[in-house]
Image (cartoon, rainbow, N blue to C red; front, side, top):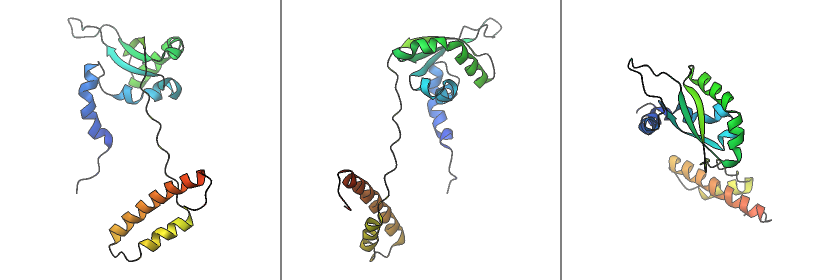
Length: 169
């Protein structure tokens, strides 16, 4: 059996070509945007692309790049005022002077959906009902799977029932 691999090992090769088309050497700035700008601003902005200046005859890039950031209209002025600090943070993140200026494009920003809360645990009576219904089952793997399924179903149903003002479902 193969060893489990970190998700980054699988996703990075898939994202790299799309990131490269937008001027990103890798997806680090996309993935670490909340860490760089802070959770609040990250919810209202996202890096779009990096525009690099043309290389000189010696192959050296003469100036730092321009980072294009999409920002929600309400936060554009705030991001504009904090741009010098963000440039410092981005350059510190990479360890070299890679970004020299930030250009803001106002528009809708895709925000990730908040994670769903874990389903509530079923109460003792619901657990006993589940255990009793699985008494005659001999296969241990199937029994565990059905036990987890029953807890998930009765836990959510019980929570809905309690919210409606009832007792045990």
